[in-house]
Image (cartoon, rainbow, N blue to C red; front, side, top):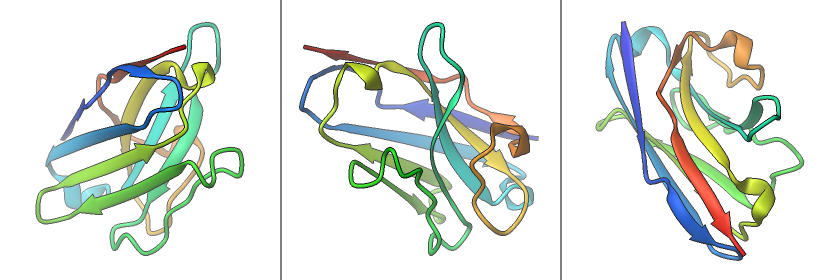
Length: 124
């Protein structure tokens, strides 16, 4: 089993930045791919970013490129998400997830373990 716990959410002003962390524990070696997803009310789960075990191959959708960065510290079993220039469309619950494999993936169906999520609200 793998346990994931997100932190860093809260209320953020529009135009500001966001820094989230996800601490992983358990059999993390079995699910080396780490990803971030988000889900706003009445919207489908959306892929935000993913990163390989080495951190050398981040995957970010075109819609978020330039605003999002993902990184990881394997010594701390922690993955990070930074997002800037926030707007109301970024309001959502942000989830950390872990998947097996070698390359980061954008489909939530590949991810086996999920954190409980952290809520981010962007105020205008």
